[in-house]
Length: 97
Image: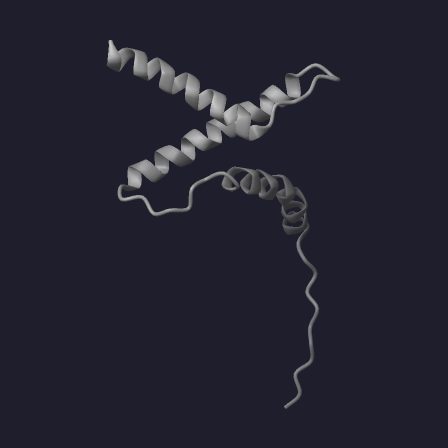
């Protein structure tokens, strides 16, 4: 019994999907480069950290887009640190006083 290879043409919708997935892969690579991969005890903490990381990444992308041409862009790590410091500073003011 001889099996011949049969070539099937890929549907155009599948090709279009594959062509457009590059942006999603890039976004996920950027997102997970700073996410902590340790296990978290509570599921809601993992969800919260993931959502917060996505918010910070989206805002970083927007900030980079609206920066004037020729200005030195801030690194993503520095941007994230500034946001976390600003949020924790406000929280610390409320809890200390």
